[in-house]
Amino acid sequence: MVEQTQIDKWKKEHGKVYVARPASDIEVYYRTLTREDYINIMQESQTSLNMDPELKTVQLCVLHGFDIDSFTKRGGLTTVIYEDIMVKSGFVVIESEEL
Image (cartoon, rainbow, N blue to C red):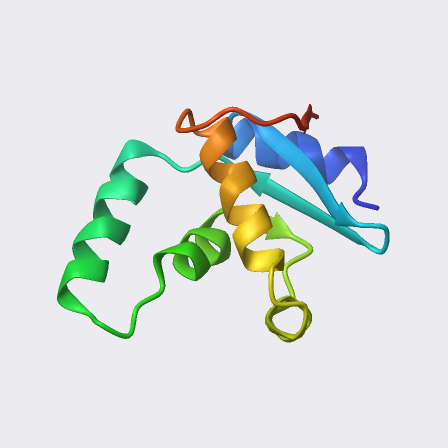
């Protein structure tokens, strides 16, 4: 669990901060994707065939709780967190908790 003082720092820097719990043993704290972030990721994905937009988005937005080894071993975690980020960034609707 992340201390409230850290959450407050993130909120001051990024605005809204969320926590997602995709599994009983995982808490992922993240910020939303800005329009500029989104454009940059989409442009990079068009020029680099090896770039994974989902993974790039998760790496960029997750503030705490992202461990690439855990995420790749549990195949769907990156996608689940990506989808939650996209929801809170205004692309789709899903339920999560604002901190």
